[in-house]
Image (cartoon, rainbow, N blue to C red; front, side, top):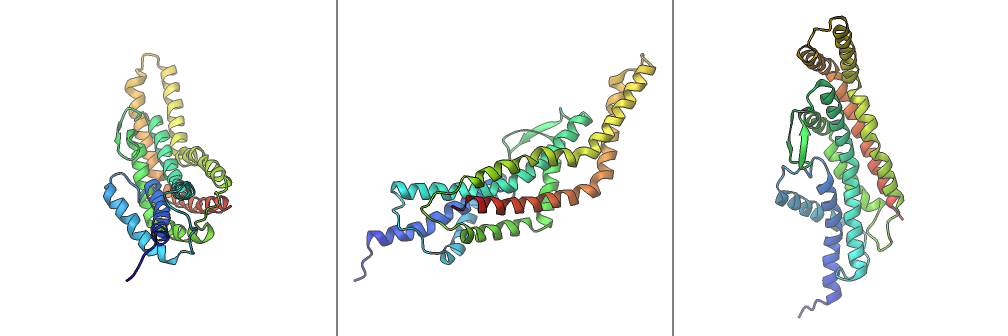
Length: 261
């Protein structure tokens, strides 16, 4: 008669639970795999499928009861690692949306907002457009494959262990988050510069002809100038976003290295 001990049960549960939490954390935070338009059951199912493929390849896991205090700490650490990896990529998408927000605000489209299910808040239409464009660029450069490869590689560089993760990885993540403002401004700079020139021209016209209604003339001028600037800058936005996602994958690797104890 085959007998299964409690320690064996705990070992089997831990061998699946710990990697599953890391995979689930990345999927929940990743801008593509964790998109809220994807049903939650599909995201959890994808995490289960990836875990079934990855779990047999892992090194021996720490012998800790998953229901004990050390086991809970290991589980929370794996979830934190996955979330940190996912946020490394999400920051790049947020920078692209920031560029759209800045350009739309200067064009006078700040009032054109709708509910964004991804962030559960009101989002400017141009920011949402830049976000969708960034996701398409992310897919075109095989970013989803790179992220999944980095996830599998993270189990080698940062194996599941009882030792606590180093806080240096979180510091790297916070420093990388500063790219939201710098990259967002740089991507939107051509449109913002063109609109600044247009606003100066409208201001000179209003100064030269005081009876001229600035609201009647200024809004069509800024809107047309902004759309024209977007059209001319479009060929350069794609490579800039591709470079941004390349930096995001490098930042993901630095975060994993920084979390290694």
